[in-house]
Image 1 (cartoon, helix red, strand yellow):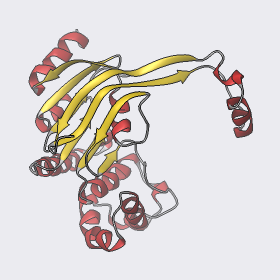
Image 2 (cartoon, helix red, strand yellow; image 1 turned 180 degrees about the horizontal axis):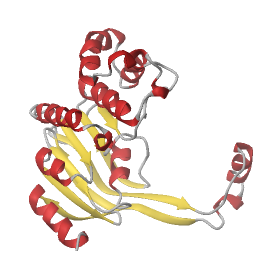
Image 3 (tube, helix red, strand yellow; image 1 turned 120 degrees about the horizontal axis):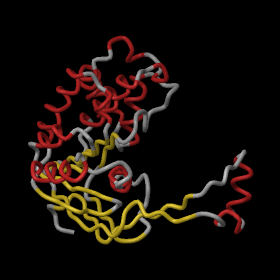
Length: 250
């Protein structure tokens, strides 16, 4: 892989099995899984179909499309939360993802403790996390709640802490999936400015999934339009947004 490549998809597909079967207990699921019964009545569904694209270091890239188009699945593959069914995926750099509210946090730990917890997951040493601790806390602006268990947090508070941890622990690839949609306007604007600052570093890459088209036009160098797991358009943000609106907002 070339040195300036952050992410490379080569003929990537992702298949899921879907079906109506309900399992009342974990034991029932395990027993059924190891029998042929598990696969009976299930249908295959391709969330992604034969995707090939490259994202360069220093780019800020966005994915748009209707619900179910496969946008979030792409981020989960890059974050290694899920694996492709076929194709070759290469990721060059340390990844921090804001994929779901509360992802990577422990609900019983305080906000402060979760900064250590999340930082450790991202491969940071305790000394480095301690060095950045106050900066993370100040940016999240949670006040005294930073020392409360995060199971008491609102969705907006989760977003504040999650973004602050991810952006300040120096990832090389930052993934953002709709999480900023739950923040208040002033904090979201602060996040936008921080992402713009992050993108000024030519070795760092931002990949965003959002229905906020204004945000994508502001923050991204390039957009991909997805439909039914396939890329149908790619290019300059304004042109891709206009294409999307013409197809889906009539």
